[in-house]
Amino acid sequence: MKKMLTKTDIFAAILTLCAVIPGFVVYNKLPEKVATHFNISNEPDSYMPKLAAIVVLPVVLAVMEIVCCLITSTDKRTENSRKANTMVRFIIPVLAFVMEGMIILYALEKLTNVGAVTGLLISVLLIVIGNYMPKTRQNSFLGIKTPRTLSDERIWDKTHRFAGFVWTIGGIVLLPVSLLGMYIPALILMSVFVMIPVVYSFVVR
Image (tube, rainbow, N blue to C red):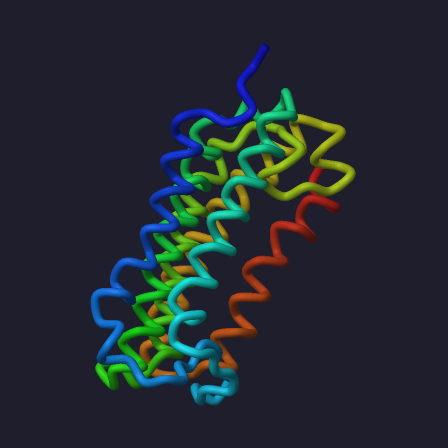
């Protein structure tokens, strides 16, 4: 019987939870209320008590990690994209540390331009995921899942090769846009780059 969770899955979840450590290291220096969400104008619009701000995000992401692992373990076709699945397992811990770091640095007044860092993070994610898309074999969990890609392996492969190219280019284009603080254009561009391969999957022959 196949294990529901592997050692790698458990390690990734524990690593995600470890994102609470930096917050506890500087706990006494944090204000009682910590900004945890920012609007499109790069201004905080949601706050939490500092203990919740440190703990909630890593716990939520760790649970998400476990849920994703459980879903993939019950889908036989996800074995076809083992490399991409491993990549996804370790994206979540990285996100936990980066996002917690942003929250803490902003609270300590060491970081002011949260929007630029968020844009850079999205750009890097697009580039990383774009490089993995062509390696993703047909499965029911990870990738561009439309009726055509799931029913035809040839369409799946063409779509994901195309997505890899588009998302890698998109990530590179978004880097300077994010650094220049052009948040609304960056959001529009990101949405366009993400949707192009989805539309492509419906028209490719």
